[in-house]
Length: 562
Image 1 (cartoon, rainbow, N blue to C red):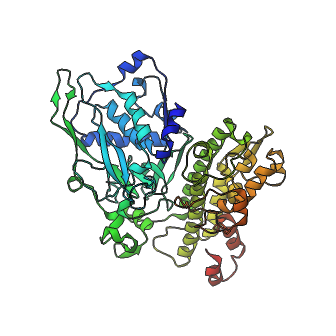
Image 2 (tube, helix red, strand yellow):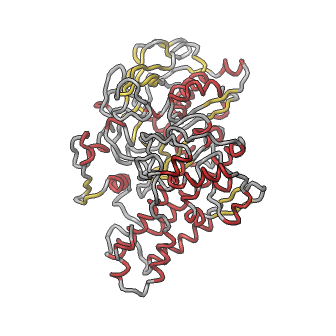
Image 3 (cartoon, rainbow, N blue to C red):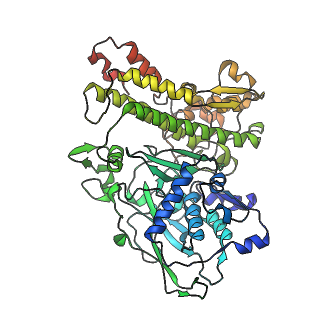
């Protein structure tokens, strides 16, 4: 099965694989019979509940989640193992739910880059167009469902999400559409597409407007976090950020004696007929030209906001309010979960013994989007998102302190020493987050989030390096690493790449170690940057607490903030 994947790996942004182990009889019984012409409101609500339950479950792979008590259909499954990556997860979950509920399902089976011949459909500059579609056959006896899921993971890639949100072709319609930005539209099951090659599913929107997401990865581990600035906003031609599955209808079918629908064709509901279709995420508020998205403004109740604050305000119940201590706790809990998910990914690589093999002579053409061993077991994209989360936490806490100094009405804080209270919450959550790894000598090394912050730019994304370097060890902690001079040289040369939190998928990065060492360095060089952004919020807060006797004007000195 793996060899088959390698034949198509160059087509996909997120590597995917489903493995099946079942008897022929079980395969024959797992049939998909279409009994409904369309997804009703109750079906869509059940879909939302299905995704929400899976997202809230303590499971670390897609296969674990689908076999957990959160899945009410698990007892009806044949003996099947699911290994699904980020792009596949929304499609496979939607198809799985449709199968279990007798619903129609269709998908884009081929995409073409709008950049012209030879363009990479995963990272096309102008998006993609649909050139072929397929759907679940409608027969009285039904069709085997598992091979359809297998087909999806071999066909679907992040290229499916990279399409123009204004496209409305009646025959080659897109599988998804752009929704409004409110609590009625951004619901569990909504897709969050990162144009840097990643897709997630929303599984909860909190009362304060925070959007919780989960996603699968090339090594089949699952991560959960909240949607932040790592999801870049772009123009409609690339389809970022939010997408929902388009309503479809089965027309012209006949109903067999057993209730199954036979024949007919699948029709997509046009954008204009979808209640929550909107180009708001591109047009701004008040709405402007979606193709001039760079200049879009965001105003709510007379207040000018940036896009991400506007989004959260729109999704909040009532007025958007920041409760800084609770916000810090929530952000650290999310980062803790992401770090524990990274641990799972590193352990998968170690179990395969990749760290014991010789590294290639040069890096992949792009370390963020490739295939083979590097795609499956390296973590540059995951690590970049983790660094972005730490930076976002740092920036937000700095903003909370500034808001407190001017008694900003949006900040809801009743104490009299916000820096000290934030610092106390930091240490509380740091103690609550249990992180550890087993070193090359077989001993357990305990870490904390505070340790991770101190070594954030030392965490190696390279699967060929020892576990100690994967976790940024130094001094005595590094002594058990068995890497030789060649791997040590690679680690040092990759420092500038580790400093970079921006994922540049369109930049050539296939350098040798000698070329990495020579430089020059910069965001568009493909060699990394000389320094990563400041993320040490603990040190920043400690500095303020130590200076608490200083005049407020000194504390608010812009030189002390990023």
